[in-house]
Image (cartoon, rainbow, N blue to C red; front, side, top):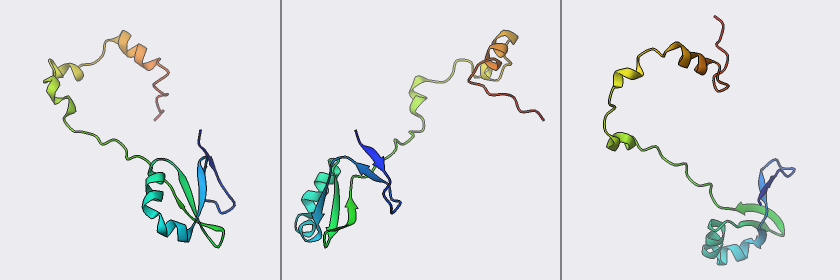
Length: 106
């Protein structure tokens, strides 16, 4: 399990699989280090033995919305039903639901 830690500098770092690599080694093996970072490892680049930079995987991109995804289901049978008022029992059930917050007082 990866846990986030906040060192004195204020930057958020992941605690978990992390190793320190000298800048000279990083220049020599950059392609391999990038592949390892993409696989989930966090690599700290050190200059003169002091942490200087962090090489880590990017967060996955958010799923994109696909417009018209439900178009293949066909049109609604009775679209006017969406605009019709609810019967009083159904309306009372909705208003007493914990999902619906209090109605603001005007």
